[in-house]
Length: 314
Image (cartoon, rainbow, N blue to C red; front, side, top):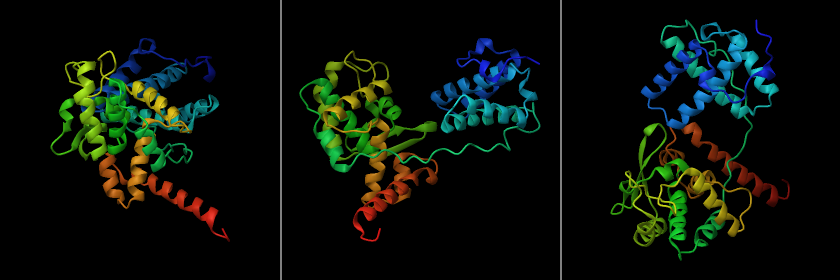
């Protein structure tokens, strides 16, 4: 048995360091994920998480078919010693469940050692929500003097109007915009397509950007990307985050407003306005209603705060 300890496990693994059995297991998993049309981001995350575990296991002379529940519990303990966040541990366990499910489905294992493991409890964090008034101030505060200002106004108007993820925003092309129907075709997680209504302020900002700004930025490449950088390339998610930081700072908003906070605000403001959870689920592109129900906790927290402030016997 190797004398390597848990703390000796490399933190930045690479597939070249894996032995053939672990490389083969990883290739089988990636093939299964691609057949299920998993997103590129999921493929990358699972590869990193499985490679980390594979190096940890190989240091203990464990092949994929030799991993048992006890070994997985030891690995979880190792992650805890390394002070991994519960959310990170849960993600890594999801990758390992997928790995051993793949091994079982290909007839290499009779049972997955991950089946009986429980996922660590995550902290209960309510999503960040920007108040409706602050959201209006943020969007109205973006000028319309330059091409980049027009782009940013359209970008964030659309993000809030449709509750888009950052990746969905940067994946939009000219063909995704239905000007006559005032709606947007969005390719979400798992390649699921949804059609979203676009409010008039967002449509007006988008038309202004397309007429006055986008032609000056470039053609968007082969895919005719909707939102372009000043050098004419399609925007990335990092660009969206950086530009949002600029405008939230100028608007005087605190608390680290992110693109996902705009999405949370979209959903929460719909709920405040009387929309039902099923409708919000469809607009957000959630596969499960339980994912959408987090917004009822936001509403409950808001009501409790108002009650505590206002009721004499609270």
